Length: 137
Image (cartoon, rainbow, N blue to C red; front, side, top):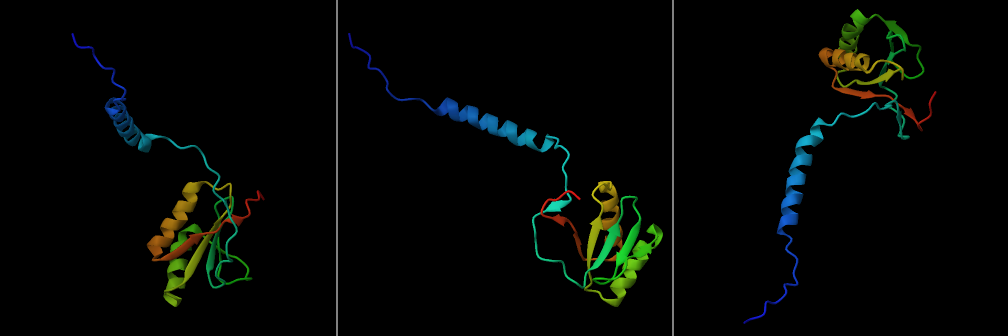
């Protein structure tokens, strides 16, 4: 009678099968994961914004004002006139850049509304202004 030899190799095929199944499960469930609240207003220090950029300010009550050039006083703009004001600025300079400076406690939907109004006015170059250095003013 012949004696059986011991097999000294590990069969890794079942482990690979399990890993592939887990990979598929994670790929399917990852987009469904809900994310928590984030605090967006702070960012790392960057170069100063362009001095010719028009700043659209939104205060904590949702009121709009526009600063046309650096150092100028903000001009209050009613919400119903914001789109036409932006369109007038674009008519003067089609390459005009804009910054949206919103108060940190403002509802994020109001910031999106400003961006949508700017898009409807034809604005192509727009950015969000943030505080640099992560300070909480």
